[in-house]
Length: 264
Image 1 (cartoon, helix red, strand yellow):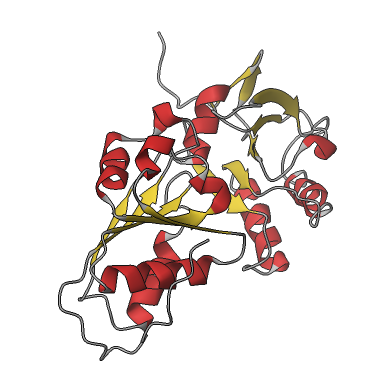
Image 2: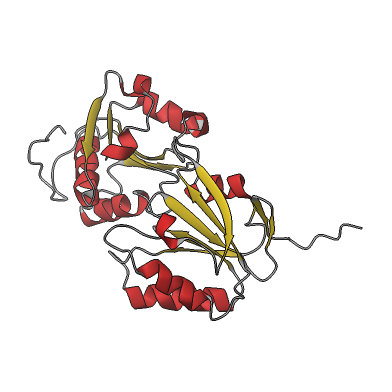
């Protein structure tokens, strides 16, 4: 990682010609699913910042000749400040997220940093959408999201666990299809089982569940289970889970949640 010199974060720091700051969604990881708009922004940017795993998803030709700043997990605020520093210094900068930058991505913290530093009107800021992980994974399963659904992250790093459980409880009681991000990790190996237990209070054991790992990346896995048979140990942070509603049914290796169109 390249280290930037300490910058003056005060709102009064003089700026003559700020650059553009683009928060870019890379999609699920396959170069074929990187949108033309995102590719164009990455080509035109002078600096590209991101979590090192996501930087590795960018085609090498788009990084050539650029200032590339890659850093590890839990350094989101640092990356946002670096991106703002570069933009205020006149550098056209791309801050990347996997999936869509506005869904559990970097768009939110970056806007907060711009607000905190009084730079909202001093930086040409934009969010470049990407194909979200839930859309990519749903496509591999068929049509699990044809009706109303709720997306919930099981990571309790920024959200209290009891609040997460309440959301699962209310959403499953309301018969939403549930999409679970960050379902299980080495350090969070018990929360998924508890979340499924809460959902099971409102759902039958035969409720279909889709498990997708590494959607549109090497090692892709797609499988269909039920709420009662889901192998929790096979779920990790590279996985997304789809828990059907009362109308969802399994069609072999696919899931269908009917929208209700009359077919006669």
